[in-house]
Length: 260
Image 1 (spheres, helix red, strand yellow):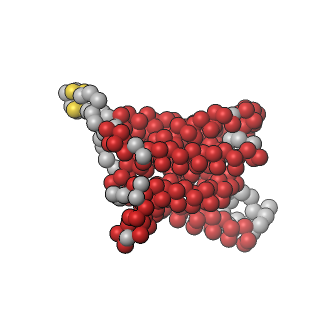
Image 2 (cartoon, rainbow, N blue to C red):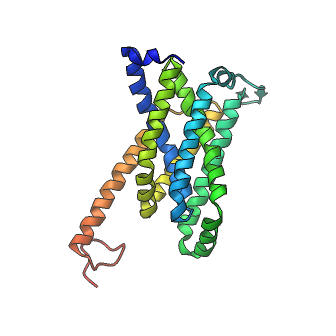
Image 3 (spheres, rainbow, N blue to C red):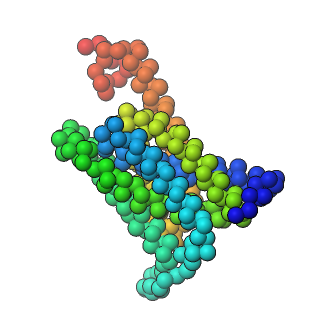
């Protein structure tokens, strides 16, 4: 691995660009880990988050060192001729398809449990105390899907292996620094958790579409996420203002409703 590429202007620009891209691509991984770790006892969440992100980093670096093998993952395995479609899936396509379906199923199940509320509180608490290994396994499996997408992006954006590896290490370091704050914020705000689950559902749809060769520009996905976060921030400010104006009003009633 030639680190001399990092000392050139082109290498530094590639490093900055790729680090930013890897960090953005890693946010959905952080959100997924945060949602899963929220099911664990509070004392074990930080450890699960760290292990999940360190596992993601290790998987990305290993995949980068097997670029030749990784390139072969895009070769078609077989051809499927139907009357309306011709489909030639590769290993990458099948991984993306499976990962997208799992992510959609997980997001829908979490949404269902969130909507059910206290009705299944006892069952949820039992799951939290006994599911550390299960949660970690789910995190590592989804790390594979996110890592594959991330590494393929890295290979397309940079030529030097050293630039790719350093960019991945820096981006995972940034994610480790942000993970606790994101997880705490998502855990303490039910509306934000719902939004995070909607993001995961959207990402699952995107991965599934990629798996069947229907390309969706990631820019559209990130714009939708950013706009949703913007609307949620406005809603939070409106709710805070309503509480300041009338702290005794009933939850869900208009801000100017009479006191009770």
